[in-house]
Length: 164
Image 1 (cartoon, one colour):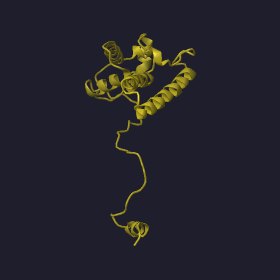
Image 2 (spheres, rainbow, N blue to C red):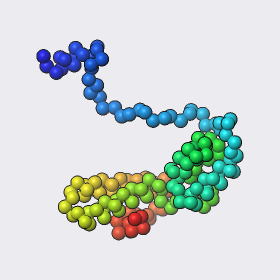
Image 3 (cartoon, one colour):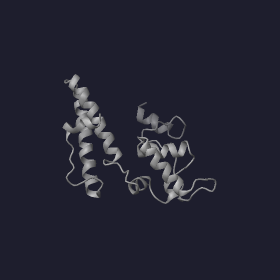
Image 4 (cartoon, one colour):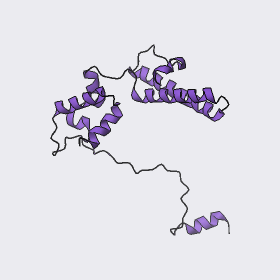
């Protein structure tokens, strides 16, 4: 009996082999309504001050959201303040000059470049660096289009020493 016949027979039973390549669905979902929870005691200005103080301590915006959720019990900044986290930072003049995801990719490219200086024949890492740098260029193109980066900004690997 061939594998295909076995799979067809087993389809009705619990021994069916799932050959689809679906991505996981185990993440939590946000509530559909953005309303401030009734049990939350923080006021809008207190949350905004918390966001600014955490950013001044050196936490990136993504980490600030996690800290507010896990430490302070604030499920979402926008539900409490009516503004996104980056908008709060922008109003206080603290907005990062390069968006966080782009800065992380640039840091990653710098690490791979340092690795390639020691191991110049590591062709897998060279290919990885090419893929990272193409992501950087695509993301920079998007951020220029939406106005998050100045139009004359460009990615230059020589300037990577800033991010290491």
